[in-house]
Length: 212
Image (cartoon, rainbow, N blue to C red):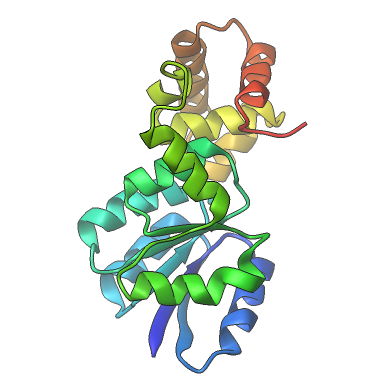
């Protein structure tokens, strides 16, 4: 029996994934978490075979969780299941140690197959994820992107700012102070050589971090 942890901050999503998995006779959901810190604690203390995690979670997000899991629980393969289809998220997740990447849109058809694949020691990538990695490895990009200079947390804050969230809303989402959020915002402006939130939003849209 493949023992699975589901980490997603939306209970409806967790319920849906559980129903998909319950239709199998070789996979069982043995734990759930609604944020990265809770998921990491479960991975350190519970016997698990695969962790299915979202990227956008409050507190410790999925990218941070993947990085910590690679060090503290390397025997548990992490499968990313997210709404994000942008290259930056795909590349960062794989580089952080994820063994697979699929979107929630493809979950009904591919989740069970992906869980089995990473449990067997393989990798599972959607066609788009595989193409993004191939382009990056082949040097298909023209030059270095400014996004490459940003940390995972800076990417998350940038995306939320571009979506119109206030510093307080972002602080609440990640369990950090408003002052810390503003520090990230000022750092983003400096790194990207931009002047205000409107330019940050335009940059995020142009680089595929948010959709219009």
